[in-house]
Amino acid sequence: MDNNIFNNSQSLKLNDKSKSLVNQFNYNYNLIKEQIGKGDNLHSELSKIYDQIFSNVLNLSNSLEQTVFFNELKDYGKNLLNEDLHHFKTRDKFFKETSKLDDEKYLKGRISFLGRLLLKLIFLSITPKLRNNVKKGKYKREDLSVNSGIRIFLMTLILNLEFRNKGILKELSIYKKKRLIVSGLSLELSIPSNWWEDKDAIKTPRTSYMHFDESISNPKSIMYLSKVNKNNGPFSMLVDSKNIINPSPIQFLLGRVIGKVGREKSKISHLFNHKYHQTLGCNVFRSYFDKIPAELKFNSHFGFDIEKNSKIESKLIKNEKVLYGDFGDFFIFDGSETLHRGGLIKQGDRLVFQIIFGEYKRNYILKKIINKISKKN
Image (cartoon, rainbow, N blue to C red; front, side, top):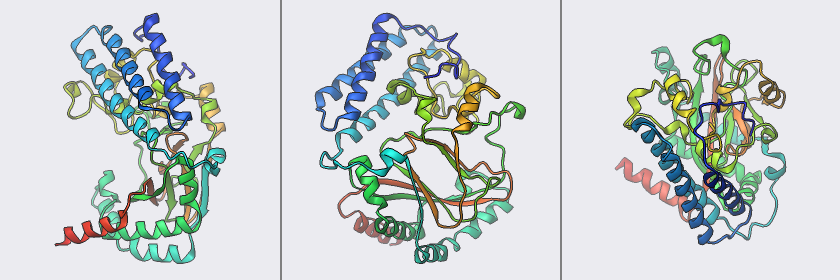
């Protein structure tokens, strides 16, 4: 990985034994990731190596607060490691074909006229509430989005039919080696804001909000429900970002959870003043982050951390693919593999579906219907 992104001058130094453990972790993780059907023994060994690495890191801590910081990072990382390993373990070895996603990294298209009509009839009954919240000065994400209820459920059914008919669900299932369907849906309204800017706006890099997602199990889709141009938050991605940014497995694991450390329920939350998605937006938090050994250090939302006018900023922007579109256009991608961003509104607004694909479970639809009926009663 390009170490110029983060300041490693303050990083705690691992000894040779710890560095060897890190190398072994990275090797084993890649082995499990690339070869379907690796046994529980290798999974168990990987967890033990992880614990040994952090045992050594904790011995380097020189304050109670730093120990709490590293322990939280360890625990969140361990939970995510278990999720990753479960994903790898439950892949179906009978999916032997190669998906278009393996080569092209994203899929795009437009749903049918009938699909667009049915969806519009439903979501137009929701959007007035979102726009009224804007008028009332309610700008939090929960005020400008809806991700549950009977209307969301009905739109999920429509999208599953659309994506099945277009062969999208088949491609995703081949890609992740397990049967996938639309399992989550959020209708989101985005309005002009500056949450992605640095506290000193002049220093805001052109890469602001570029990030990887936390889960490796759930591909995503952005579907435009209104016309989207360069000013109202187009979705964008870098399909070859790993030629520029290529964290090791353990860096990527910890980088996907670093944003959880020191938050509300933490014993050290009072030390930090976090700024929305900007993990390192708090200088005190950054000072703790800087202590992480270089071999473990990463932040999945590193777009905020790129130095403005730097060479790496230019490389990332040069390779960014910005995707404009209209109602019904969708873009499907693996957010854990593909660097992406969107929703940075300069003018107007943007209405989209954020769609999550998850593993199909037997009688999934029937159980959903029963749950909806039970809640009504």
